[in-house]
Structure formats: C-alpha cells, structure tokens
Figure (cartoon, rainbow over the protein chains, first blue to last red):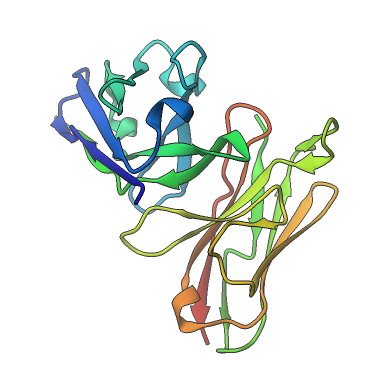
Length: 120
Length: 113
C-alpha cells in the first residue's frame, strides 16, 4: 500500500523557519518525481514545488522562490521542504504528492498533509 | 500563469441524477506531440486530501467508478457524474499540469438535493 506521511508542521512566527518531511513507503521512491502542494484553510489546492527522481531537476512556484527548498533522500525514501522567511500567507496544510506514472508533473497521490501556521 | 475557472461554484443534484461540472483554461493545455490535454480532475471530501479521478482530460484513474467521466472541447473541460451517489458529495477541482505553475481551479461543491 502506498503511504505518504508528512510531519514537521506547527506554529511558527513570521520570519521563522520549518522543515517538513514526507516519509514514503509502498512504492519505489527513487523512481518517482515528487511534489509539495498546499491548501489554506477553506481554500483550494496550490502547487508549491516539484523535484525529479534524482533531485537534479527542481521547479518552484514564484511565491516561494528563494524562501523554500525542496529536496529528497532516496536512501531514506523521504522528501523534504525547507521553509524559510515564513509569512502569514504561508499558513496552510502542506501535502506531499507522488508524480503520476502517466505524467510526472501530475500530483497523482497525496498524503494527508501537515498544518503550518505562521502567526505572532 | 494559466488561470483555471470552474462553474458552477456549487450544485445540488438528486440521487441518481446527472451532475455536470465545467472548467475552462485561460490558454491551451494541449501537448501537440501526443495530442493530449494536460488536465486533471480531483475529488476532495472533508478532512481528506484530493483524490485523482481523471487525467489527460478524459482518462479515468484506476479504481474510479465509471460513473465519472471527463470530456474536452478546446480549452473547455467537463466532469460528469452520470448517476450521483451519496458518497460523491465533495468538492471537485480541475488542474492543468501542462506548464508551471501547475494551477488549480477554485472548486465546485457538489451536494445532494
């Protein structure tokens, strides 16, 4: 069974940092591209970032460029999102998603997510 | 950025009746090399992450009931639930994955009438 389990969320002050993790199991992690997607309370999903299978090809949404860094450890089957210079508008549930076999840019299977709250 | 719009914002349909959700992209999401539209549909129930229903505009994901279908006409896309079941109450989102940023529509809430 495919499992994606996010952790690392919590309450952080504006300007602070958090590192999110996404532990995976049930599939060959190093064969899949991975995404981070976020969803503010009561709002629709917003795509954040994508990393290819070996970590050599990374793209970000403009609103996180220079502040967030996506990475992966294929030996640990784990995806990461380092979040710096956090703002109130970054408050959201952050989910990792596995790229779909038909198209790696499609977030095909999502984890439950971890809540990040940015507030004084 | 490609802007995705959806209509209606919400709809209520009787059990067993048809539900139709529309999505429009501000520009083409058609990849000419394979003649496929890079358009997906997701279902999200309360407290759950989005679940992929349809990709390439009309290909049903494995395990998705065949009452869900997708269609396309240029930059207009439609998700149809042919016979609404109680478990289909959810918010439905379209998403383009043709170019970055991969943008989502605002969602359509489907309820039982």
